[in-house]
Image (tube, rainbow, N blue to C red; front, side):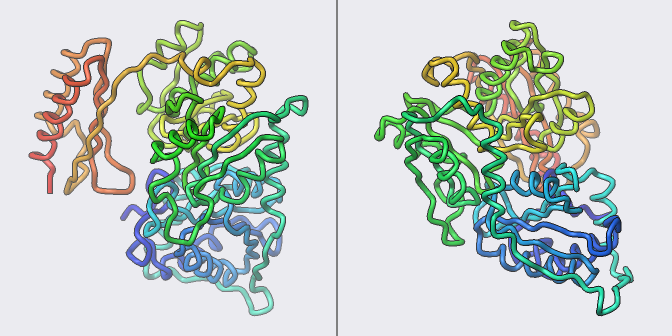
Length: 450
C-alpha cells in the first residue's frame, strides 16, 4: 500500500500530490467513515498555522467532513498543542492541524489528534490511507437533513492561554524578566507575547507579522542567530524561539548561547529529579539525542529510554510506561502532567519557573550537559532499502563504530517524508567524525543514490 503518512501526519508541497485540495476532501470523507458515531453530529476541530495554503486545506477538509455529517469548529491560526488540548477539553471527536511545522511556506501538512489529545496510532493512519487511496471507495453519504455545519470558536486562544497559565505556579511572577520572543511569523504570533505579558514579563516580540509567505523564513527555532543577537542587544534574560506551529522551542541564554532540546531536557530532568517528580527517574528521548544525556542522567541516579525520531513516539513510550517527561533534540519537549504532545510555550514556562525558583541565570543552569559533537548529512536515495540488506554499508558502519568506541555512535535512518537517508555520527573529535560521515554517505550514495 502506498504510504500517505510520514513521521508526523501528511506533508508535502501545496498543490502537489499528496497535498492537494482533492486529497484533502477525500481525507475529510475518510474521517467521516472511520470516526466513531457516539452522537448524531460528531465534532472535529480544525486549527492551522499562518501559511497561505491553509485556506485551501481548511475548506477542502471541511467539505469532506460536513458531507459525512460531521460538524466542524474552526480555531484559526493557533499552536499545534492548543489543538490537542482543546480537542480533549471541548470533548470533540478529533482535532486536525493544518501545518508543515518548521518547513517553508510552500509546504503544508495535515496531522490529527484523537479525542484524548494524542496523535493517531499507525493502525488508524493505515485505515485512513487505504480508504483515501482506494478509487473504488463508496461513500455512505447521510441524508440532506443530516449534513454537518461549520462554525468558528472565537475564544480558542484564550482557553489555551488559561491552560498554560495553570501549569505555572501562581506564586511566581515574571515581573522584571526580559524575554526576546521569536514567533517565526507562525501560529504563536498572537498568543505567545500575550501569555508572557499576562504573567508580568517584559516581552520583546520579533517575527510576529505573518503574511502567509514568511513563516519560518530566516527566523524561529531553525535560525537562532537573529534571536541570539537580539538577546544581547536588549540585555534580555532569555530568548525563546518557536517554530511555525509552536510545538517546539529552542532558547538562548543571557550570554547569547543557544540551547537545543538536549540541553533543555537535561535542565528540566535535573530539576524534576531534585523534586522527586520524574517517574522512575527516567527521561524519554529519541535516538537522535546525544549520548551525553545518558551519562548525565546516570551520574544523577537516572536513566534514558530511547525511541524512534518523532515526538509521537516519545509520547507513546511515556503513555505505555507512565513516564512524566521526555522530548527531542529538535525542541519538542513533553511535560506529560500538562500536555499530550510537544508544546513550545509550556516548555518555556517550565524553564522560566526553574530560573526563578533557583534565582540563577540561564547560562549557569544550562551548562550541565557536556558538549558531544554531532555531524549529520542527508543523502538522496531512489529506494529505502533496509540497511541490513546493504552489506557494504553495514560493514563500514561497524568499522566506524569500532573506531569510535564508547565515546561515539553511528545512526542511519530514512526520512519519514522524503527520499532521504540521514547519516549522523557523534564523537569527541569533530574532524574525524566529519570524515566518517562523508565516507559513509558516499557508500550509501553508491548503493542507493539518485
